[in-house]
Amino acid sequence: MTEPVAPPYDHGAGQSERAEHRWATAAIVILVLLVVLATFAAVHWAAMPQARVEIVDPLTLHLGGEFIESNLGSAIEPDGSVTVRVVGQQYSFTPSCILVPTDTPITFRATSSDVVHGFLIDGTNVNLMLVPGYVSSLRARFEEPGERLMPCHEFCSVGHEGMWGRVKIIDKAAFTRLAADQRRLNCVE
Ligand SMILES: [Cu+2]
Image (tube, rainbow, N blue to C red; front, side, top):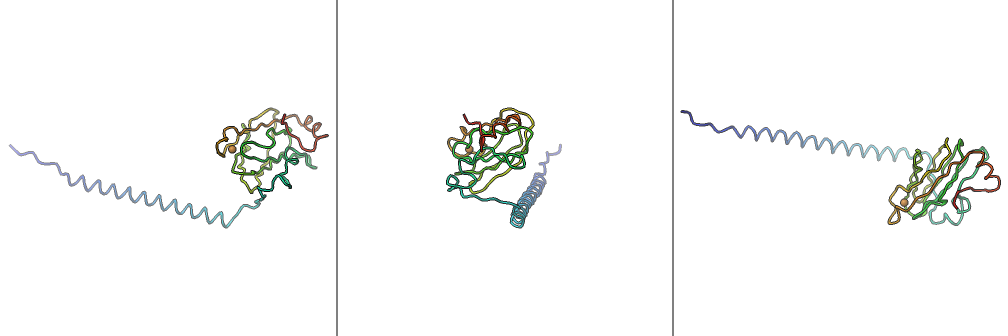
């Protein structure tokens, strides 16, 4: 009769130590990679700032300049395109209903008078951040008439979920008729 032999536990210990080393190396490699990426992004942004950054004083928006209340809404430009100017503030957009024509190049120009807000037109790729101090600008074109929702999509404090606007896209001819006797258009009722 032979005595039962104890299994070689020490071999298992060596194996798990090697595995631990492998994972520690992998974790360090991932960390180094992240630091390299973050450094690259920071240097890249610093070396190549955006070609065009427009700034605006959020404290004097209501006193004069492009974003004074009487200049907000949709305006027809001499070249036939439409510029829409919007201000976001806790907790609404001005104007709260934006009127735009179909089949026309549209430029949105928007800013915030207090904190960061989001500007998004449901079902389209119009999506901007409104940052106080900066003018956000985006070009768009709408082919189909209709009505769309425009929720604020950046949490801007306690009233955020109530911050909604609307966008009404109407036929180009109807828009042009309305524009004949109004300098700035909107669909606020
Ligand atoms: Cu908001």
